[in-house]
Image (cartoon, rainbow, N blue to C red; front, side, top):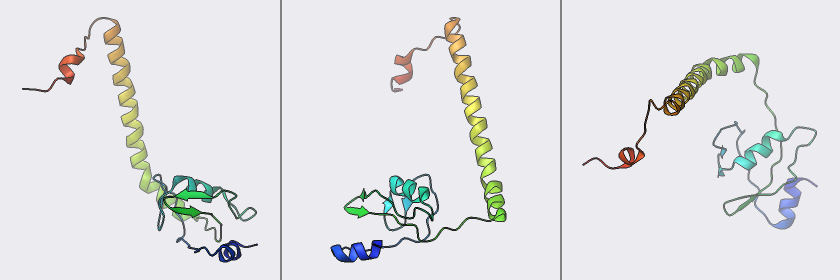
Length: 126
């Protein structure tokens, strides 16, 4: 039985979203933030096009069915990589710098060369 037939039998409204694009916040047009629905949708394939799980998003019950699957071409992937690569490199540099600073702070504290008085750090300035 198709999803449309099952919904019709139960008197439920069936809605469709535009093509999904994976987003870190899990936002789906028409549903809002629904990371679990997004994860389910991107695990489906044409051999297994329907979700076995019913998701609750706000006051809605959501089933996911794969209708169309568009794979990006090499040009589109290359353009996306070129667009996000600088941000990824910056994030990696920042993380490495933060790790180095933290390691240096720990060494200075262990050697007694740095004393942090958290009461001064947390107190409001007059």
